[in-house]
Image (tube, helix red, strand yellow):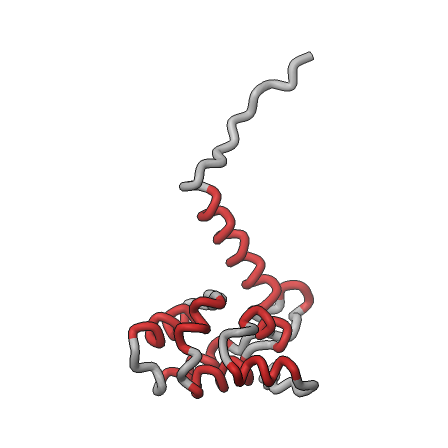
Length: 127
């Protein structure tokens, strides 16, 4: 009995796109607080973070970071590192991103590292 041959496209052009789709779906389901999965508390206050940092965005990196937030795209460690010299952006991350997610950005800013080392949780739940 033959199981047959299945073609699965594992090319480098296909896999990153599929992974991005999965990340986006998980972000919407688990972080956006849109009522999916019983209405979990939001882990990122997208609108509040965008509003908080909008006026402070002046460089290309800061504008790109703001665009990601406005598109509900989780910033990478490199994204946070590129805006870490702007204290408003760092403060916005600390207040509007759940501490569990802020751990992804460890080493990008002294303020973030100090916050992570403390027992404080400055995440504001607008819930």
